[in-house]
Image (cartoon, rainbow, N blue to C red):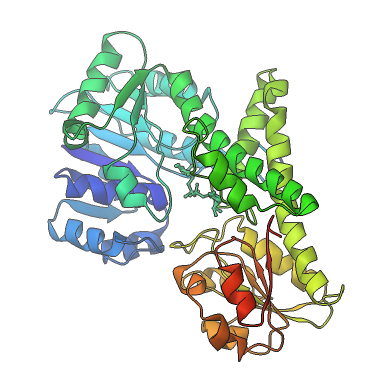
Length: 443
Ligand code: UGA
């Protein structure tokens, strides 16, 4: 089938390449010429395991192209809207300008398609009510195109983006009532035929539910993380161990073990801004009380960052002034170069703000750090970053940091002190090598 993917960031670029790999003919459109050039040349503009190979393979078939030309969507029957919805600068709400721009550009080019009904598929994470507004806009601006909007939220995780796109836990269609919705669902079923044949569950619902599914899922995940981080605070006050607590409660299937890793908290381009946008939208809908708990989820999460700065200061005798602090990790999670709302960088900034001499290292994200935070000192080689450190902060659990040999790297630092912001190091091993080890919520 002929598809267009509008917005070639993390979501769009991976979606476009996966759809081409499934056999569809895909044009990816983005306003960022530099990004389009990179993608067209087979160079991923971001770090994602497996994406370079997938992109190369898909481009080689000739079925995948990238362009800045908005007219290129005209040949497609199905249009995926994959642009970003960041937090607004002046409030908690989502900034919908990219969605609105993309839809404006698209509706001006919608026309009947020889292969069947035209379908616009919203994948961006949006405040509930946006799909209804876009559907009305399509009907008003392109009444003759016969186009139908389906809301089809995306649940991919960075670091597992390809797997989550081709083998998602579920596919959700938000459909308008009536025959238009039925026909649009059939078209989307044909797009996802491979996935559906492999048994991926597909849920059909209305627009409002489909939009809420996405933010509800991210809110639940954020709540789980903040719950265990709140327990970490209790553990610290009582001498208990949050990792053992998480393991023990996780054996209960109703609770589950996943997303109960206590540490420096969640970050990234999704969870933090999604819970804030959800609160903002609830306020607009007059049901803000329903989500006041998310304010606490956010507060617990942000408190983790300050707590790690305090632990670093305590390790340095109470003052960070002039202390050499090695920060291992800058990305918001491993296998990503994404530094949006990264807890690691928030801590690095906090330490630097209190006079610490910070050196940040990361296997993938340093270019992004230098571009956005030129005042932070970066060092690509982890051993060089550790040299002369008074305290080491492990803040992103990259495999290479988890695997460090405490005896060997102990020779590099000035003082053997480590704060394990992700609770991934073996305390006994590090202590045996002469380190003062501090985990989060661990004795
Ligand atoms: C998240 C969701 O997991 C995806 O399902 C969703 O599609 C995506 O947002 C989105 O809205 O697009 P992602 O932001 O890639 O995916 O990252 P996660 O794996 O959810 O991790 C988020 C943060 O939580 C990271 O900073 C991670 O270190 C932290 N985390 C995760 C914890 O602190 N503890 C845990 O137990 C798990």
